[in-house]
Amino acid sequence: MQISKILYLPIEEAVRDLDARLLLALHAVEAGWEVVFGQQWLLTNNAAHMPPGVFLFKGANRVQANWMKHCAQHGHLVTACDEEATPVASHSILQRNIDPDGFEAISYFFTQGPNHQRALLEKFPEAVNMFRMVGSSRFDLLRARFRLARESRVDELRNQYGNFILINTNFGYANSNWGGPKQFEEVMKTVGFYDPEIESDRKMVQDRYEFEKTTMDAFMAMIPKLAERYPKINIIVRPHPGEDKAVWEKEINNKVPNAEAIFEGSVVDWILASRLLIQNSCTTGIEAAFLNKPSVSFAPFRNPFFDIYTPNLVGRLIDTEDELFSVVDKLVESGRDSVSEYFTRPEDFSDHFYLEDGKLINQILFEQIEKAASEQTLNNDRWEPKPQYIKHHKMFNWQVRKFNKNLQAMSQDLQKIGRGLAPKGNMKLKEIGTSLFLLSPVK
Image (cartoon, rainbow, N blue to C red; front, top):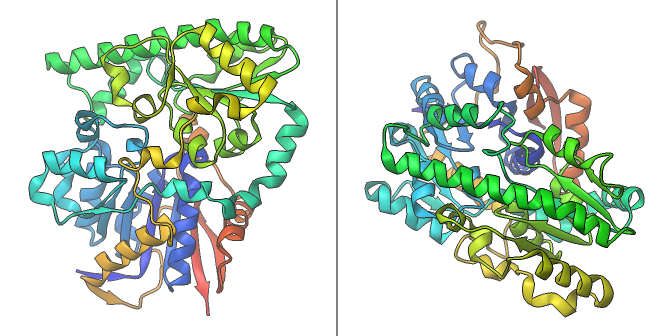
């Protein structure tokens, strides 16, 4: 296989995934590579109309497996990770995330930690040489050097909302922004996560819906009581990107005087600006630990699906409203040390996330991508679109919500991430399609 030093980074969710991919792109450009990145739909559709390079996919479900095979057929080297694996501990769920049909197209698969690696080797023992443990690329952004670029936004949030408690939700099935639970079930079928003909699958999704719906109802009931108990503290409810935020806005905004449901910007900024994070089964509970911010898991309901999530297996859980209010009372009156036994630390997650103190995870990830490329025949071709290249296409509203960037906004995002990395070389950013960009080194 002959490929160019071009890294292709298809991105689904800008709010969640973009910053980490920009950090990876900066590492690649420093090494003399070009990077094409942006909304995944246009990028993958153009695989046949761009020079062969290295694709990094954010997952390997059935839809992504079809994209991988398409890219491989057109001469690209395919690598993948699993961004959906971050909050998941269950081996069976981690294995469900991977469609076996796409494995033949993958050269390297990057795992997040020992538990993730064990889970995939259980299912794919023959692919032992394919797996490379690198960690979660998003966690680089939680390091101190990348927080400096967030200070102005964090200050803005504190000035606007004062002393606030942040509540992050994670109920993308019970409160799906796809239109409802039935539509979400269709999505699960499409990506290969769920087969309604299999009894164990039906039981799994039934458990998931029951867990999410009951827990969501408990959060809905708890929030007004928390707000009433602390009238001088604002309560910010941030729905998960996969949820219908209008449901939370309807129940919270203009009904609870000192509470507001808001979905905007990076969740890291909101965690840093908050006094306390309250969550259930959410990646933000892990991120708070790495940010050294107080976070508690409010878990009033348990069933078999509860145990799949890493935040539910690491640290202490709060079962009742009374216990939750007691913890918040102590935190507000006496400070975090009085309730420190409730908070998790980065080392508590050592079996789930690989960390190397001397290197950024994205640096390790790019080194592995370079290793995969070095096993092929490399040429010095630069990125040029072929005549059939598609520059613009109509995006559905849900796609626009997930990724919608112009050149100015992307330049600002790149500068923000670059402050933490301090790249040495010059580079050029160019818009090459709808929410699609080319980052190149300038010699």
